[in-house]
Amino acid sequence: MKALYKKILRFFSRLPERLEIWKFFFAEWFAIFRKKPLYKDIKWTKTQQQEFDTYWKTYYGKKISNRWHRLYEASTGVHRVNYFPEILYSVKLEPKLNNSRYSAVFSDKTLNDLLFENRIPNVRTPKYYFFNNHGLYYDAQRNLITEAQALKILGNCGEAVIKPTVDSSSGHNVAVLCMQNGANIKDGRTAEEILRQYKSNFIVQEKIQPCEALAQLYPTAINTMRVITYVVADRIETVPITLRIGGGGKEVDNIHAGGVCIHVDNNGVLSKYAYRLGYGDSFEKTEEHPDTHTVFSGYKLDFVPEIVAAAKRLHTLTADMRMISWDFTVDSEGCIVVIEANYCGQSVWFPQMISGEPLFGENTEEVLQYIRK
Image (cartoon, rainbow, N blue to C red):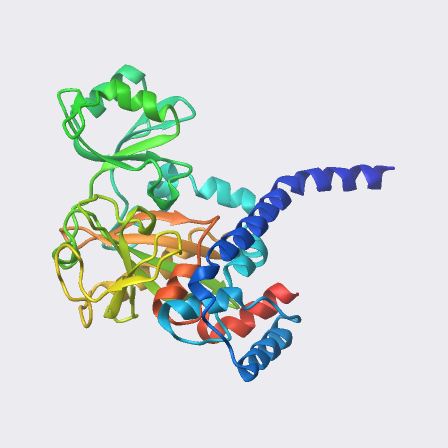
């Protein structure tokens, strides 16, 4: 009886995680069928299909659908049998790498300064003016303050960014403010109206001024480097690096908000084409930024190796997480800024779609053996 009781408790304790996995399973299949017009013209030869099936049966233990591989191939024209499909990552790998309970805690953006601020020379987090956590307000020194005090801080903080602390994926509800005399001069909203809109669980922090190399690409947004680190065996590796660049006068650089993204090699050299991917339903590409007309091919960001080294070092500060999607930028003083770290619901399709490289490269077989177990 006692064993049955414990079994029932274990079942219900894991139920939320299992439901989340099933949610991703159906969402990924829905998305890949919706995008069929993008990859329907990619036809594999019999030999290509046989090589694909042999690879996945050998290293994963069974055949998988080739739909995700054909989608990535349709974007760059590069055929790879070892691309890592989004559904396998969402449903199998991430739940195994990152414990959902720890992910939920680390994902709270109010912890970023405690975890990462000044842990490495020349690496910092954005300074904040105040944040709200479940209805309670805290100032920059983490002292409890009243709503009236928060309104006073917000009303005259100048340029600032406000965003949710628990879910701002794809730039959702992220806004750039310019607060003077109790109101946002960009749209006229008062500080009271802004607080009513965000209600709880949000942070107000400085607006980063990008360094010259990033501003030359597009000066209105901070332009962030997505560096994904993962643990394999006893080492930390990275997947193909992506630079997200804003556009169209917008102050955010998210690819879902109209920005473009481009592959950057480990030496900091940009690829020839930047892609406007939307939600993975467009392959529109350009050789120069549509607003600044800066040519991408050969453009170099000298700080990329330093960012990669920082990401690998910072990864060890959250040892319970085996895969992390970092967003970095470099400010006008040349300091690396950790904008945020993502631990759950990460996306791995766009690094492959714009680089033509498999997510885990030569480590793919080792990663597949891990989830095969």
